[in-house]
Image 1 (cartoon, rainbow, N blue to C red):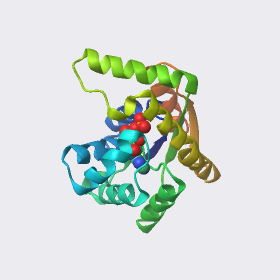
Image 2: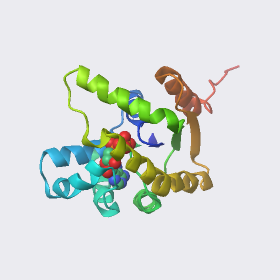
Image 3: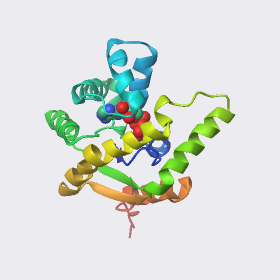
Length: 201
Ligand code: ADP
């Protein structure tokens, strides 16, 4: 299963990707997680990305395309993958299409989580509070200012990615405001909906 999860920051892509990973036994490729790991490890890419990420901007396409190309070529991604946070620009989507075409592969679906943006800021504030309550560290880009920048980047750069996939008839939309389990169920329906049990006799 080769899937892309699309949606604005805070839409729940990470939560649903983790569930899809368990269901389909394929790796969850989160560029955000990978970049945060690179920042923590102080790699060259991480050091370059840190200032951009903290402000809520997008790191250069070449950086993330390179990361994803390596992951897709890795043996554990042979049976598929869940892309979470990538592609975030049309250029990234085009680069992904090229990578897959070179292997004679295509995506199975692109799932877009639609959310009410007025509610997103409240969601992010809750995520920060919950993290603090558990003794964790809140992401530097979960401040209201950085969050607004992430939302602006989503509108300017990522919303056109949905149109890109709609044109290819790959886009499926789910109500991301529903409770987490209901969203999972809706995604399952979309992905398995075509498969009917075969009746014998
Ligand atoms: P969210 O979806 O909640 O905004 P992510 O964890 O997916 O968070 O991403 C965090 C940050 O990492 C982004 O704001 C951006 O700076 C960077 N990033 C992640 N994926 C990409 C990508 N595909 N292209 C450019 N920047 C990215």
